[in-house]
Image (tube, rainbow, N blue to C red):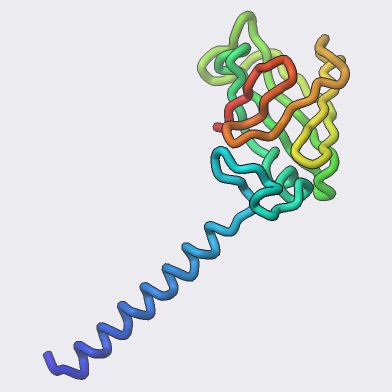
Length: 143
């Protein structure tokens, strides 16, 4: 191999490394707070964190294998919370009695009306790094 081809390969690797570092730096500036850090200390607005923090699937220790899904609207202020229930849990495939309820989001807090399924009307949950911590101390862990 000639020295010019080695230099060209070195430049290619250097460029690839720079691109990787750029994306790595960008990825660490997301709106999701690392464990133990609050959104305010990181300089993120609670509204941005909530909109990106609540959507997703969760597991509920009070209802093993049952589905828990939060879908946030485009305005990041409202959500649909849905899932399945069994007695006491659901089969491994998550099947069970399906339900869907409405919720509202304010900052890093979600308030859900579980009354259509026999639960509390305004149960509040706080977004935490592990998932959603409800005011009754139940933690829905992020899947």
